[in-house]
Each structure stands twice: as structure tokens, then as C-alpha cells.
Image (cartoon, rainbow, N blue to C red):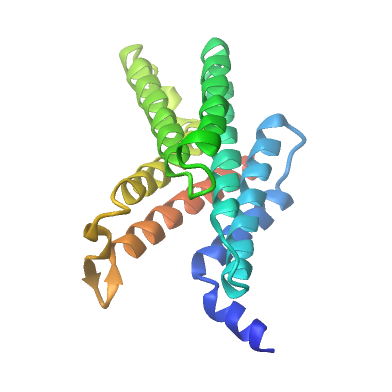
Amino acid sequence: MNDIIAFIKTVNPISFLVLITLCITIVNFKKTSLHTYLLVILVASALSEFLTVFFIISNFDICIIYNLYFIINNFFWLVILCNLLQLKKVKSIVILLFLLFCLLNILFIEKLNLNYYTFIISALTYVLIFVYQCYYQLNKENLSFFKTNNFILLFAPILFFLGMSIVFSFRNSTIKDVIIFNKIELYTFITYFVDIVYYSLLNLYLFKERKK
């Protein structure tokens, strides 16, 4: 009973938002590689949220959960990005370098500690490719690109990647502990804000896909 109470107290609202998004994805699932990749991302997100709570209650090290989540989540987002933008040559290079860096980071750099670099480097790679493609499409005056449902999907993790990269970059600074309002720290504010935008956009994408 005490464990159940501790679990309820530790779970945050974002965990339920992740679970809701996962359920919506399952209900609207289509047998395509794109939806399969998205499903894997959301399953990994849900598992990381709830396993983290369990590990905290049990006093286990949560680094392994987040390290696996960083690899799975960012890997599949990079695959989705390259597939939807039809960047076949770029995809091979980016994925190979990403996996190689993950391995080197685990073995020689951050090792079994929280692999911040894995998340930051892959997240910024995603953002840079996305921004370049937006610039490229604007130069071609291909405004229809920005009206597609695929654009919503590709844009969905942008704030999440940028926000969490900023948080991780200043992890050793007191900036993240600055109180914004009502005892809410900057770290908590950024995390909640980017997660809400992230999962809301994913739900918008799924809703529009269902209407097709």
C-alpha cells in the first residue's frame, strides 16, 4: 500500500499525457513504417516515465532508463525526419554517426552516467536538418510543404529537443534552479512547457491523420 501511495505521489502529469498520446496512437495505428516508428517512440516514452518512478521508489539508478530512452527516441526521430524528407544519403551517414557516437559515449566518455551528450548532439542534428529543409523549401517557394500534416509531425519534437538540450547544457549551473513563480523552478517550467507542446502536436497530427 505504501508503495502505491509513493508511486502516485511521484508520477507527474506529463506521464499521463504520454500515456494518453500512446493510447491515441494505438487506436489510430496504421500499418506503415511511419506509424510503427512513432509507436516505438511513444512506447519508449511511456516506459521511461513509469519505470523511472518505479526506480526512484526502489532507490535504483535511473541513468540506464534515460540512456536507453535517449538512444531509442532520438534514433527513430532521425529516421522519421530523413524518411519524410527523402534524404537517403544523409540518413545513412547521420544514423551511422549517431550510433557510433552512442557507443563511444557509453564506453569512453560519459559511460554509465547520464548520457547528456547523446541527447544534445542528436537533438541539435535533428533541429539543424529540419531548419535547413525549411529554408530550402522557402527558397523554392514551396509553401505547401508547411501546410502538410507531415510538417506538423516533423515540427512536433523541435521545442522538446531545444528545451531539453538547454536544460542539459546548464545542468551544472544554478540557472536551472531559478524560481519562475509559485516555487516553480526554471528546469520544471521548461520541461513541462516543451513536453506539453510536444505531445499536443503529436495528438494534433494523429487527429488530422484520422480525418484523412
